[in-house]
Length: 262
Ligand code: NAI
Image (cartoon, rainbow, N blue to C red; front, side):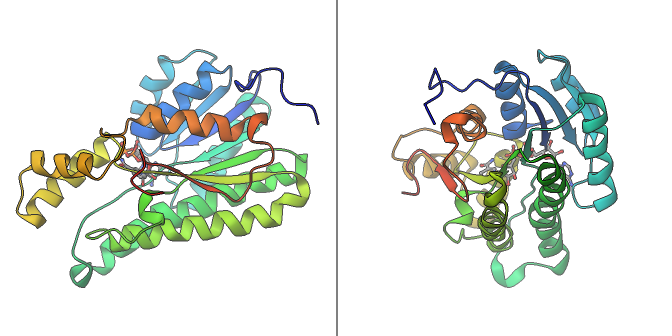
């Protein structure tokens, strides 16, 4: 039980599958893991974009197509990752979507879309990789939840519901897998500069009758650390959670928000 030689995590030789890795936070997580010596399978609905990211990374990173809403697609992606890398040590269930609408006007289709990608997608990836981790007796999982998994976010009620569900699932799975020493955690980012945020700023500006610049200024004003979050701000915490330095943490949903949520 001695501490790792360096507090800086050593993940070299490990093999990871990252969903939603073509863009934003998933891309930054894949990049940070690869920089720590991890071989990374970048799974995304957009495999061409994921391949372009993989080509920029060290360590034989590669892309895989996946639609996290579909069990058969997730099974195929996990199997392809296993076959190519000869094993799997880390799952990052990060793929997610959002849309903005007033709660009283959310359509069934919008509700289902958020639930299918954000909640069912995490469930499927965790279960299918979790079965492999249980059989081999090791592995770790990090799910991307959200600030909106801790506080109900206006104009994002469907998204909030889908992300609160991710935290509940993460805690329950963590308890079930703890006897196998398999850790399951989540990260909760705040206002992160990604393509998702660009879309949200546009919707929010329209719905609140503000300029996009005023919406962004409002995000910064809500953030004690005083700037818009970057995908790399999230990725470092994810690498930590995957590492031996976090070996006694499970079932946590870590806020990485610049202090928006304490
Ligand atoms: P993004 O839109 O830049 O990237 C999302 C990626 O997921 C894209 O590459 C997309 O192709 C992929 N994806 C979408 N649906 C998919 C599906 N059905 N199957 C496989 N891949 C799919 O978004 P961003 O911001 O990087 O989001 C990543 C995660 O972070 C999401 O779970 C999101 O909810 C969460 N998040 C984002 C925040 C933000 O402010 N940007 C804040 C808190 C959480």
